Amino acid sequence: MRTLFEFLLLAFAWLAGSALQAETLYYEASYQGLFSAGQPIAIAAVSLETLPVEAAGAEKHYQSTMQVTSQPYTFVEKHYPMRVRYRSLWTSQPLAVTALETYEKTHKLKHQIIWVDWKGKRMLRFRSRGKGAGQHVFPVSLQSWLAPGEAFQFHKYGRHKVPQGMLDWLSMLQAVRGRELRHGLRYHYAVTDGKHLYHYRVSVEKRHLLVVDGKEYRTWKLRFDATEEGKPGPAHRPVYVWWADGAKHTPLQFESRHPLGRFTIRFSAEAASAFQ
Image (cartoon, rainbow, N blue to C red):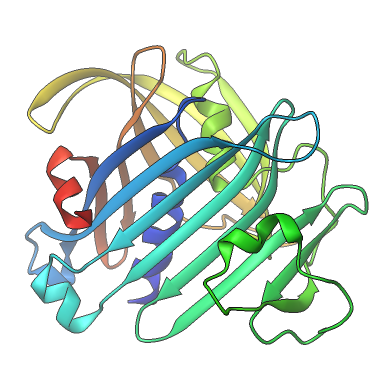
């Protein structure tokens, strides 16, 4: 089940990129494979919000927040309940990640916030119980990310030096949405999850007609491949994304195959009811 959760976290995070304006989108995730007797079953609803925020400095900042819940789905809620929040603070010019948060509540709770120190070219990880408490103060600009009464301490540095133009999953998706989509084009990005450093290759494969949420769209199908810094072989299996062929390049569907089965995430207006 850990493989299932890792894919969901990765794919949901990618979904949260949006046009450079306030926007909220909704999706539904489904699984088909060994644990569903070969039949597709819905497993989670996703809420994705992006909005401009005020921040110090000349760069224009945006915040993307993803929330995932299995609450409406009885089978998943009983056996593998999940609540996920992935939040990213990034600048548009230049496009770069400034901070990110991962909150995962399944049968365990994991919560951390990462601040990117661009001057020192390193990442600082903060948790409720930091190993390096006192070495660095939690950034004042991120205090709104903490719950009332919650306090974070410095935990440790990221494993890798920060390369120029480094993104996270959300800002990488934003970068791709702003690029030209044409058969055969490839783009490369350095991406972090706050701990690891990945090198992504994004390939534009072909045009495709796709029916999503009862409507037919002309789309581009893209393939995302990644390797991890310092390790051989792929970091994960390919993830395919179908993007609407329009000015915003809205992501409409994500798909990945694993030994456990196929995971699909599709645009769905009805999923909004899970967050009302």
